[in-house]
Image 1 (cartoon, rainbow, N blue to C red):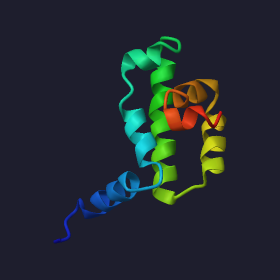
Image 2: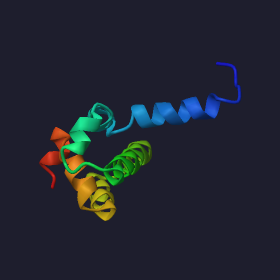
Image 3: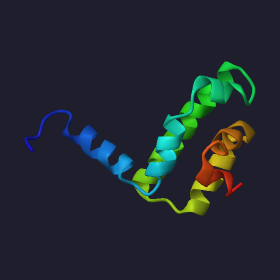
Image 4: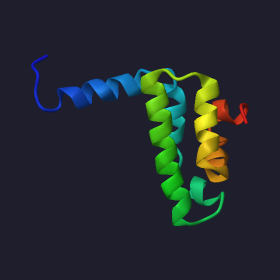
Length: 94
């Protein structure tokens, strides 16, 4: 494939979506605003959801251990843990 200004971004996206947490990311992406609002409505929850996705994307790309990912999610706070529990594979870990 010819290199262009987006080649690095495509490679990074491939690393994220082919990483060890790809199924969990798919589940997170599938959560609706209503799913998140059901925890407690507000913009803080949506912001936390956005940060949570970034944390899981990075863990997937970097092949972080499950224990390290769970620690990183816990470090985000209780709202992040509640959102993560909406993902079946994460729900059993908390």
